[in-house]
Each structure stands twice: as C-alpha cells, then as structure tokens.
Image 1 (cartoon, rainbow, N blue to C red):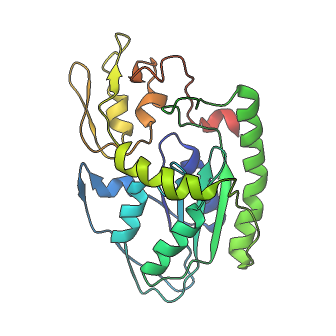
Image 2: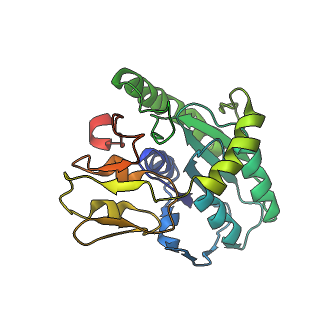
Length: 259
C-alpha cells in the first residue's frame, strides 16, 4: 500500500505510477483528516507487502500533515516489510530524508529506501518563489518520467540506488527555516478570493484538511497545511495569498497533457 499526500497532483502521479508497477493500492492520507480532527489509521499488512509514503517536500522538510499521519499510523502484522519514501520537490530536499528515516524508526519500523523526484515548482507564497517556466516544467516532467522506473526497480529488487537531491545549506534550510515554517507559516488568513470567483466550490473539494467552506465566497478556517491546492486549482484564478501571489503563475499536474 502506498500512502500519499498531494496538493497539486505531482505526488499523486508519482504514487499512482509506483502503485501500478506493484499492482498496489494508493491511500490518500487526507481521508483521515477532518479539520483539526485526525483519526487513528490502522492497517493490517500481508507478508511481503510494500509500504510506501509519497509526499511533497515543504520548506525542506516533511509536511506537517504527513508527519502527523505517520505518528498516528498503525501497521498490524509488521514483520520487516519493505518501507520506502519518495519525496517530490521543486528543487532540493535538504534533510527530509533524515527526518523521514528518524520518524519511521521511532515507530519501530525500518526504512529501506528513500528517494526524491524533482517536479514542477508549486510554492509561490514566498517572495522570490514562482512556478517554473513552461520549458523547465516540461523538462522536469520528462526527467521524472525517466527516473521513476529506476526507483521502482530499486525498490522491487531491494537494491537501493542514489536518487536523492539534498542540495546546499541543508542545515539552514531544514533545521532553521523548516521549524519556523511549521510554526509560523500555516496561517490561512492571507487567503482571499477576488471578484472573479464564481463560487464553484472546487477549492473546498480539493482542500485536504477540509479547511474551506463556500457559501457566496470561500472562507478559510484554521487548519491550513499550505499545500496551495486552492490557489493552483481555481479555474478562474480567483484566489490569492495576500499580495505576494498576484502576478505569479499557477500549476497543477494534468495527466492527460503529460502522458
């Protein structure tokens, strides 16, 4: 089974691609969250079953939503089944690998594989951050399509390969910026809809924490996880985050346009 968290579809595509190779099922961790309430997910493993975690890197670390899910996850009949993590990133992962391995070990499990897959950038709410150019977006998607088979074979054969982009200044990014991100950047207060909003409700439907309600206009609650699905998926480009996103691009993975 492969547990995944996605905001703009990058990690969903990776999870589904890997699952297809193992004839396995994907499980959206968002199904286990309702606002600030988290259920205690419990699964029973079969002998030889693969257990995968696929998620985007947030501020050079594990998304708080995925971290919370793994902390509460129960795997019955665990007997050293292969556990792997695949992290999608716009550029670099920092110490995400080390964080993930430590989290898995704290559960009494063993992590056998950790890999990263570079995908188009989606985090646009920091000054200086924007989506990639169309040329770079296409290049990243093609590279990802070429890299994934090697990762899949490595997991299947249990022969780890080096496919992880740590990047530079990892201590600064993952040990200093990431904790500040988790502590201070989860606010949904800067979100608002413009006059272009048609109240279609898509933003509420794609929100993994069910943090958005729509009557006449979207209203954000207090359980944002900063996946930015609402911004990128809005068909009218009617959602902004303060002033910082006004002139920036939008992106979400469109499978039919890629494969």
